[in-house]
Length: 64
Image (cartoon, rainbow, N blue to C red; front, side, top):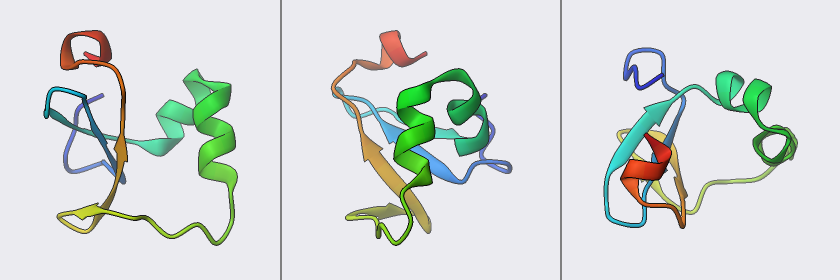
């Protein structure tokens, strides 16, 4: 799911690895992400190449 052309969000692991992902895929796989992405009017604190960044507590190996 790490396809930069289809990505609309970046997950940033705790050890600094960027994962360019689709929020739709994440929402289908996780109710936590579904709730997070359903919040209207939320503006991202951080952007990377124009995509909102979500800082994760998990390391890259776990997210991968």
